Length: 127
Length: 360
Image (cartoon, rainbow over all chains, first blue to last red; front, side, top):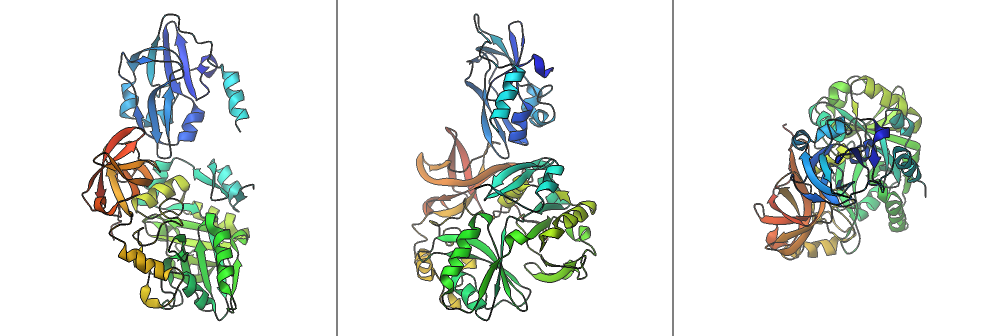
């Protein structure tokens, strides 16, 4: 994934938007904060999700966080590989470590999402 | 107050450690990854910067008298070169800290938790009265590195003029490293065989580089936490605090009522009599891989019965385990409980501690 083409939530999820489909994962900053991922809870296909609301949970040895949906819609696909082996998120959170694909609801917007520059600015400011 | 930095701060940063605040210090939580570091310690040898641990020397003819007054274990029985674990308690039996006491030929020493350095130093000063002893805090002038794991003696082979393989468990020696005085003890906080080395701070980087060259793998506080959790070792601020007695914590073996007077003695004798009513520390094994985090509620039949103090998915056992305090009627091995993990009651069974014990 080209990080500059992605959209971001302040809570460290990225979304790759292609037409009506948003592919969702977490940023390398989130992975670094989490340390080794030990458990991942993802929704079933068909589940309705809301922009900014939790759709799942990610857990490491050190911490547990909600996974928030960047967009409103329904879950169209779940990455089975990452469900079976959450360490894929540690190795490549922008590639093989993607989590779900969401089919955006009619009229759903991405305007609230940050671009890379805004996301990185937020990271810098939180330090 | 800005966090303190150990003499190895730059060394950690140069090795891409992620630094976090801990007990008033800025410490490495991980380098290569917590699970990898954990497995290294179980199977080979890891090295930990534990310079944040507080190191006090006690000198003078009354050092033993002061230690006996504040320490629950019996230091009078210690021989030179011996190390003992025990608690420092308040009058009401609440735990001020868990510490190691070292006896050397001509003085005594203590290793105290980082977060309790100032509290315990002040406590010792307050209890000293007219006793003829001097307590010196040399934490900030020294460094301490732990080398832990089954291959640690190979790693440390011929590092010191005295052979650490001759050290028995919970024994220490005063020796030298490249001509610099140091203390090496056969102690640790991982459940593995290990050494802890303390030395003047100017020698910290040379010692760390040497250990690295000899094959020890740098490990952070993240692995230290999962390792000690598997070994069911309590951590101050989690399993232990000023409202918990050593009896409740399952540390009655480190309280010696036959040694004579010490602070907290009466309350602890009373605490023993209250075993039937006071919450006590248990080990829990949970279903699934979700971790029971600190402060999670422990339930029995839907009724709150206790609270989790530490919990994680742990790499060697590949299970979600936890420690916590529960009412005595729920505190027996095999007891079927639930832990509320973020709103989901999750089955948890009381199991004997430690969860992990190394093969001898």
